[in-house]
Image (cartoon, rainbow, N blue to C red; front, side, top):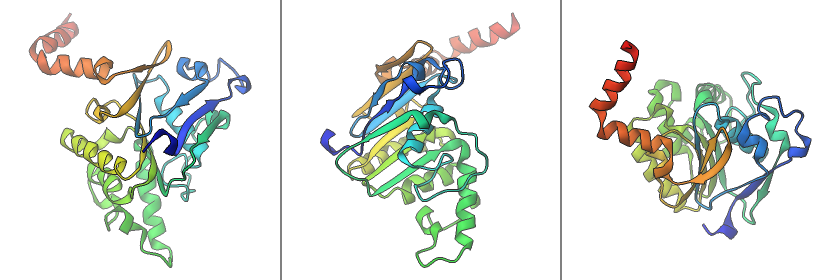
Length: 253
């Protein structure tokens, strides 16, 4: 997909209207400093340590686009608990010239709620194909956590779509994470655009991409090899015994 064909080109943040610089999430450095966030035509990553605002930022982008805060497509309107932040009220998506045929907001922390809603919808009368068919033909609750995650990636994502994924690796083994890279590539070749928040160096490894890194000082563009996720994982794998000694000795001391 060329830059002219982007579904979502960038989002703008109306910082002048923020209610308070001392109130969450407007007190987070990355969010407080953001005026505009541009997206890659294929894959954009949002990474950083816990507490930097990744999920809040992803949620605001998804809700501003029209997705349900707890995940799913634009047609999903269930709500188990209103816990999403008001940040989306200050976010303006700038759309491309093309309209996506498909779209999905995948949110690991509320995927159980999504799966329950799908089961409820399956019980309701419908003139179309059963909704479970879009997720592999059986209840997501009747699969392991990892299998149910992967069922959405394989069966529900249909191409020519905007897919916003918040920590999709949460229930996936390293092998499944590599398989997910293959699936991302398949969908990119079908003119899809991804925005992904992740802690996984494997998921973050798609070559034709852009990585934003959230820090206590704000937000910066980086490479996979410069992220703490990659550096720490590489150090641990290559120097496991030494690192374990240091970690465990710290507890004894």
